[in-house]
Length: 466
Image (tube, rainbow, N blue to C red; front, top):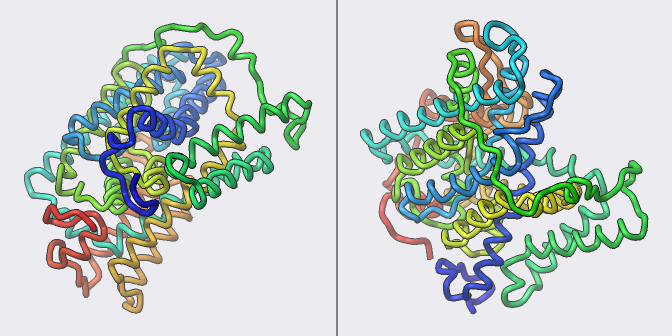
């Protein structure tokens, strides 16, 4: 076993049982946010159409698309990038818009059929990634990264973590005691854990806090608002084995114009996430396997998900936090988590059981994961010695922070009569990149300082960080 501070890049040395546990940990890390997307989308269509979704964007289909999309992404990325693809929240506004369409073919259209048209828009959105991947392939990652210096990527990564903070607080506030139990267990195992327990703090936090919740529920203790800690009604009615309710997408220009432009925002988030993962594991993922390959994998995974009625995929910050905590950076572990997600999608009973996890536990786990993402961004800035005494750098960082944290609902504008919303993170990334181009005095050149680039995980040469 490695020293507790060493990074494990080949998890096979730990043995199959431990690799399975590590994979399970990654699956739990992404689970809460991933299944939240179909739950929210279902509420949009039920409110607008008066009926819930029974096909397409369901928890089972979402889990299948997350697992299959992750495996497909790994193939495109030459099996090198330890990234997990889960449901993208950026498309929620698009789903809500499609749910409320009532003109033309959408008049009196059932909810299941409406969501199939929305998913057709997601297919087109994923294909837009291929255009960006081609541009990067033609001009080269070095020229593209010239416009993504540490003064831009660092603050954007910080915003990714901080923008999720509200979600952690909201979930934890449903039962602060359980949230603090989950957080305390993670901290204890991460700091004082020995052997295998040292590298699965998230999983231990989930399991132990879940057991505590079961005991509290058995003793008749409720959440502070009087609601029950658990509701097992869905477990009793769920089948043991069953196919996810897939639904082929449909195409209509109106839905495409609503959903596809959102790819502008998610592509910017993808670049930020790849920078975060690169900085976390100290590898050269933006140059090898290449940003064009990761964009290709993310885009095709999104299109394939939309094709069968699933949500758009995106690289998950939660799993980046797990990489930092566990110090196990082997992509094989992520692929194991993907297989777990696929298997569970065919077992409705298990999906229902895992779905009973109290929101407070998810909130407690998120406290650590989201904070880790922001800490990685801070490290990015510090290790690259970004000079914040320079006015241009201070302006760029300040604008990124205000945009990334201030535009809570994003920025909505009309193009050809169609409403398009850019998320706060996309606005922040675009603003930072534009300011870096416009303001004079840019002293960063990608590839000139290999050590500085290596500290960001984006060095132009293939050395690994020591």
